[in-house]
Each structure stands twice: as structure tokens, then as C-alpha cells.
Length: 465
Image (cartoon, rainbow, N blue to C red; front, side, top):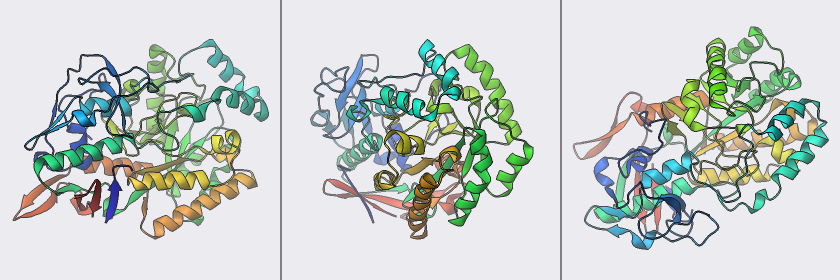
């Protein structure tokens, strides 16, 4: 039994507007439970202004709110929507639209207090990326630390892992169960084989030195039985050939596209983005790639459809140590149009080593624990460029040892990113059907899925797989 406390996909999701109708749709997509168990009525006009409020003590929401004034700043006193919720016969009445709130978080539509971003085409940003290749590492680290100062005082999303979306889902599920007078709800478990959580390793290759180290990094991963993905910059950064890419694939690893030329300008301007997206699609076909990640985690999910990949890995769970702050506030994959988003749920190696000056896996272990607590996706970015030296490589080796122990105990399903995206897409098409008083999973690939139950346990939810 997996116990979850209150403390603790649909391919038709429109790209031009992340807010879709149907209160409770997102929670039903998440759990894949029969629709009759979750009946939610939203008592709000989506056209009214949006702001921050809470659903209980530890779930910050952003959206339209009908029970009072929702402040524009997350640092203001936030009203609690929970006392305004009505639990009637089978129906939960909410003073907000839960689908709008979840989409606002996943798509980073909220306006978090203190957010700064270099995501636009500012002259300062252009100058930085123009001079970046000429800067000594010490100078780069100094500028980055100055820019990121105050990161640890940003109140939302919550560092080091934000579980807001999952807390909203759990709270709404408990309310729906109480409204329906049931203490058990069947659903389709999140991961194949009943794994408690999932883990992926990814490697963004930024320099020629990193490209030259890829073979050694694959040797290290193979030593612990892990396969991973390598995101390759197609233009200008370093030289590579078809044999380099084929070697990665032949060894059972994955090749993806990493931006176009890593100049930090991909999302600066719409027309230029579309021109670059056309070339990126050409490289997708040339690489045989299914996945994409932008440089420096710059992102605009409203534009992702032009890239035409199966999945993306450009949105962090919490982005306090990234140039573009924000975060999707979830530890699970989710759909952006027809694309599966695999959020980054742990700190990257570069800020861990060079901004926090932390050469241990303590923070990674804490993040793994917080993600696994919600049974989510533990995802890593380890740059070949930054683990060449012995000290950081030793830390990465310790991380592999820790992940291997979790995998061998059955705590995590260790997979390639493309396998996770494929599973999430497959799972979204499965359905629960009651036959002869028993619940059965129907659909292609149902043999990989596990039936689970969400069980009311006081003010907690216990998961039985």
C-alpha cells in the first residue's frame, strides 16, 4: 500500500488556449478512473479576472475565483477556497475551475511574484550569449550567481520540488469520494508493472569536449545498467557525424535534438522561431529523434506544436535556478496538444556544482524522495561537459549507485525518455470497464497496466496497487 497524505492526457488539448472546458477533466485524465466517480461543478465565470488563492494550507492555485478577491501577488494574503466548497449528493461544487487552475500551473500561466526572465529578445541577453563562448568559466559563474541572487526567497513554486498539481488532484479526489459516499475508487496505476515511480537520465551535449566524452559517459551508465538520452545541438556548437549518432543508438541509448544552435534566441521572436523550427524538424528526421529540449530551458509551450516532436523536456518543475523562472508545479508527464511533456523534476548538474557549490547527492536524494512520495517522474539533466573532471564524475557515479539500488528494489522504473512518453500516451487511451462485479483494464497495451484503488484513510489517501 502506498499512502499519500493531504500534506504531502488527452491528445486533444488545444495549443492556442490551455484552458479547456469540463470541470474535473484533468483529474479524470490523471487517474483514469470511471467518470461517474468524479462529478465536479464549477461555480465560476472563466471570463472574470484571475489571481492567487489556496485550496487548503499547502496548495496554491491561480485562476478565476468566485468566492472573493484573488490577489495578483502570491505574497499577499491568499483566501482559502476549501471552506467555500460544497459537497452535495454525488457532486462537489467549487468556487473555481480546477481544469483552468491545473492548466495555468502546467503551462506557467500564473504571474509568480519576483519572476525574472531572459526569455525575451533583450539586448542584454543577446550580448550575454554572444560573449558567452569567450568568457572564462569563473566570469560566467560570477554573472550567473549575480543574476540568480535571491532565488531561495522565491515563494512559489516551492523549492526543491513543487507538488501543487498533485495536491490539488488528491484533495479533489477526497472531496469527490466523500460526495459520492464511497471509500474506494478504482483507477489505472501511473506506471507499468506497478512501479512506485519512474526515473530517466538525460544528457545535454553543449561543447566539443562534451561530445568527445559521450562514449565514456555511456560506459559509466552501462556499468550500472542504465540507458539514457543524449540531446545533440545540430548547428555551430561542435562537429559530429552520422557515425557518432549511430554509435549512441547502437549501444541502446537515445538521440534527441537540443535546440538549433544553443544561442539562447529560439523563443525570442515568433517569426524567427518558425524559421528555426523548420530546420529543427529537418534534424528531427535526420537524427531519427522523438524528443526535443530547448537550450537553457527557455520555453513557450504555446509554440511547441510547430516543433512536431513526440515529446518535449524543456519545462522544469520549479525553475528558481534557471534564467527563465517559473515551473509547471507537477511531477508527472502531461499533454501539450499532441506532445507529451516530460518535466525536469531535479536540479541540473551545472547549478548544483557551480552555483550552489554542492558536490554531493544530498539535494538529489531529497528531490528523488519528494517526487517518489507522489509516485511521479524523477528526471535528471547531466551534461557530459560538466562531469569530465574526477570530482563531479564521482558525484554522478554516486547518483547512479543510488538509483540502481532503487531500481533493483522495484522502487522505480528506469527507462528511456521515449519509453516513458510512449507509455504515457498508451496509458491515456486505456479504460476501466466493470465486468461481472470486477474492474478490468481495456485497450491496447493493457497487459502492462495495473489496476489500483484510491482508498480514503482519514484525511489521507492510500493507494493500493
